[in-house]
Image 1 (cartoon, one colour):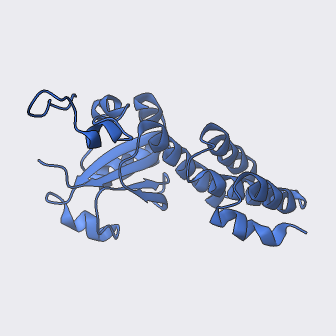
Image 2 (cartoon, chains in turn purple, cyan; image 1 turned 90 degrees about the vertical axis):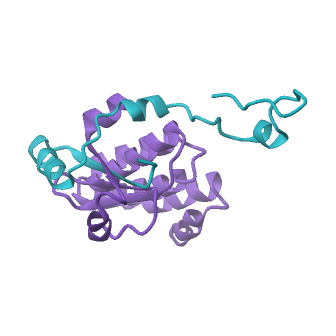
Length: 139
Length: 63
């Protein structure tokens, strides 16, 4: 985990008693909260609470995928979202990753991607709200 | 980290035995080993220069 963080991120710790204005600046009202910002400083992902190492890395990967999506790097975003879903299939964020992988693929030009994604969500994560969101794509 | 035995030497409490996470989750040592910065703006400049993302941990851990 350390190498993943240090290779991909510049890590910063902000303590509520030492830097309350930084909390205000980023709209953080509770702890712990973790943010992923892209290299330009734009927030791309946040989550609350410390997690086991595997899920912590999964959230970081999700943040990188969202950043690629925001940059309209559709193929890269799809690949990163799929990696999240495949590496952490039982994580609560896995169906979200499947959903956005499908959207990225659609944005990349595959008009069949949404239907396939809706069916995948229905089959693999039927109880997930992401399956509900994707249900409109299933004909 | 181990849970101290209860009075009477019965070992960890039922609650401790049921805990789904160990007291110190796997990977915590790695988090401790990370060279965390404290200045967000300096870190932003570093991230921009290195084309890396920023991970910001807002916390209230005991100082």
